[in-house]
Length: 122
Length: 111
Image (cartoon, rainbow over all chains, first blue to last red; front, side):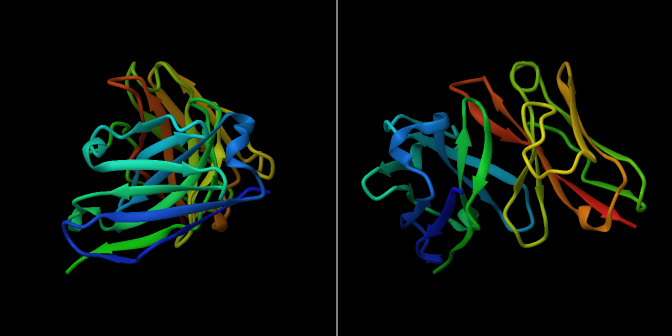
C-alpha cells in the first residue's frame, strides 16, 4: 500500500520560499512503476483544488502555467522523496498542500498525502 | 473561476439518486477522460471514479460516472448520510503545455 506524507514549515514569511517534501513509502519513486507521476496539489482555505505540478521519476516536470515562474519540483529517488519549492510567496499562497501519486498519463490521482497547511504571514 | 463548471451545491434525502454535472471544453473533457474525487470534511480527497466510469476497488457501485462530449456526470444512487462531502471532477487539459484542471467542487448535503 503506497503512502505519502508531506513535511515542511507551517509558516512562511512573505517574499520567502515555501519548501515542502513528500516522502513515499510502500513503493519506489525510482522504478517508474505504474507509469507514476508525482504531483503537488493545493487547496486554499474553503476553496477548491488547484494542481501545482508534477515530476516523473526521470526528473521531467510539468507545471501549472500560473505558477511556472516561481515553481521548482525535484525528486530524490535515493530517499524516495519529491519536493516543492515555491518562491516569492504571498498571502495568496496560504493553502493546504497535498502530494499525490498520478498513475498513468494523464491517468488519475490514486494516492494522496494527508495534506499540510502552510500559512504565509509575517 | 474554475475551468470546469460544477454546481456549487446538491442535496438529496437518504435513498434518493443525485447527479452532479461537470462541464468543460474540447481541450479538456472533450479530449481526455474524467476523474471524480470525494473529499470528506477535514480529509484529503479520495479517488472515486477514474477514466470516466471506472470505480477503484472498495468504492461502492452506488457511485457511477459518465461522459458525453464536453460534459461529465457523477451519479450517486441509494444516497447515504456518509455520502455528505465535497465532490470534484478533474481532467487533463491539452491547452498550452497541458495541465490538470479541477471543477470548483460540489457540496453534497444529505437532508
